[in-house]
Picture: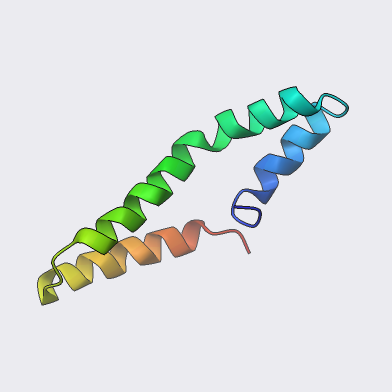
Length: 71
């Protein structure tokens, strides 16, 4: 989480400097949807029946998520 959402954390830290409770609430609200999607993706991967056809779909999803990862 620290690496994936580092930019969001930095912005919240700068905007709400000195207001720790508000800073943490803002950060949680900003990343909530993305973090939920990330967890849902992992859960789907763990539960899926592994067939050759689905392997290509999984590879495409992995590639899309890899491209979204910050450097």
